[in-house]
Structure formats: C-alpha cells, structure tokens
Length: 313
Image: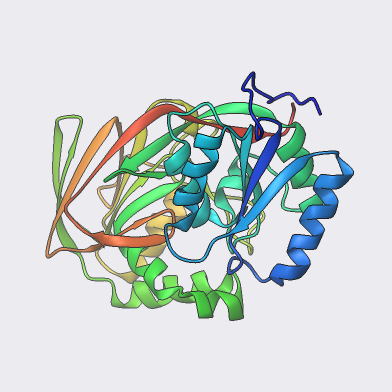
C-alpha cells in the first residue's frame, strides 16, 4: 500500500500502522469499536496491529515499542489524555501520529479539523498529510493542548471517569461550575523567558493550541488573541486568570470569547518558550486533562516536535 505519509523505513512493521486504543475513553463498547476499526482499515487495504491500554501511562510505553519496531504511524483511538501519552513517546521522532477521536472533548482533533466520524477519521489516518506541530513539555511528559495550574486542574480532577461516562461533556460543565464556586486565589509567581509576574489568580494556563471547543456552543473559546495555527508558532501562550469574584470569572470568560486579552488585569496573556510557575499555597497541575501533581512546575516548548496526520493529504 502506498500513502502520502509512508516513510523509507524497512522491516516487518514498516508498512503497518500501530493502533493504540483506550477502551475506557468515550462511550463506545470496546468490542464493537474494535470491529468497526478493523473494517474501516481493511476497506482501505491498510495493515495494522491494535493493542488496548490497561493503565495510566501505558500508551507511552506501547508507542515507544512501536517507534523502536519501525511502524509507519501510530494511531490513537481515545481522548486527549491518551494522545498526550502517545505524543510523549513520538516527540522528536519521524513517526507520525494519527487520531481517531473517541474521548469526551476531543480538543486536539477539533483544532486540527480531524473528523470525529470513525470512517472519515480512518481516511485521514491512512491517507492524511503529515503536518508539523509544536508540543509543550513538563517533566518529560508532552502536551499537545493545555497544561494548567489551579482552577482548570481542579475542574479536570472533579470531572472523573465515572462522571464522564454518565454525562459525557456535561461532566466538564458540572466540574467547572463546582470548581468556580469553591475557587480560592493563590499567589502565583510566574517566570516566562526571564519576565517575572507576581499576581493573585485562580489559574495559570499554558496553551500550545489556541482554542477550546464545547458541545454546547457553535464556536470555540479562544485562549489566545490569534488562535489559528498557534500550535506552529514555536511559542507557548500563557494565560493568567485573576478574577476577584464569581461574576468577575464570567466577565473574564466573556472577554476571552471576544479575543480581548489586554487592558484588564483580570486576564493577562503573554508568550514564552519556557515558563516556570510557583504558587502559595501550592495548587494542582493538569496536562491535557490529566492531573499530574502540584506546583512548582516548569514547561517548555518543543518546536515542531511531532508530525500529525491531518486532512488534505
């Protein structure tokens, strides 16, 4: 089989796609999903091997094996957290990442215009264009979307797997409201490429992509003034959310929706290649939806650190 992203590698796996499936992502029955994936790849004459993840971090381990064996691509069937795990192993390699979005939010797929319909996503996975994309990195773990300290990490911790299985995207809405009610500002000390900022805030977000999408709105929520292709500019976007009360938080979100990121000390935005965040008291940290610890934390950008198969190839 020929493809626009086939590499010159040789070996028993060079013409095969390695599929990493997270059976707990989304609301599909795993057995039915495996059969549907098999039919879609077979219909395109695409050879593949499929392995399911069994625990947190397993996607990283599986993807490292796929890279060592010389697979021509790694395809993640799951959500943004599983994608981040696979991206950690693919960072800096020539093996492209393909996506079949099956998570609750599927933010990366939506930013990259990868379809959520399975058959269409498999078409991109087998014939898509390898597109360079920046990655963020924290303690050796990559993130394609957003890392954050404070409020957004509390939201992700509240939106548990059982809640997402039951309510889908509404779990994030519930978690956001609950976290907002109990949000307590911390004193943040942020150093971004040598620029220091000290501020009382509820959250500091570090974005690799520029827009978040919800199931309830026909448009995205910008995280940066110019979200298009923000994942290719070689910089991380730092967003400091510093409302004084709950109505302030709604006002901050409204400003972001209108892409007004200056002129208000409740919402600060700047860009950097490396960002260090400390908070007093310490606050939780999340990476692409997974809680991973507490502050302090250092994030850096890996310019064009991965290639993702996108439509148009």
